[in-house]
Length: 112
Image (cartoon, rainbow, N blue to C red; front, side, top):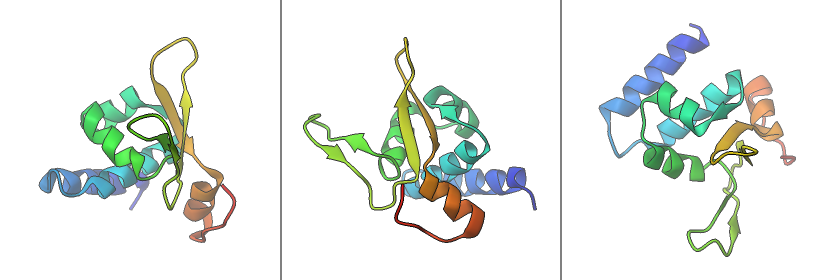
């Protein structure tokens, strides 16, 4: 089974349980970002999820600002880097070193 089949399976599982499996949506985004760096628009097209659902899911796997913008929040397992797109509104997501090592070897390291 290749990555395309796995991605289809994960997407089907997520769509079968709307509103409850946000972590599966985050996993799907991580797998898409493992193939190449992705923008939020790319992830919306690839997953079929709205911007709001994606933002909520990605908060659990990427560093983000608190809702009031006063505090930088790092999730317990930081798997995606979020970078501002220069000259445009939006972000691009790519794997952290830790996520890459998890996918390559299945082991978590302390370095991000």
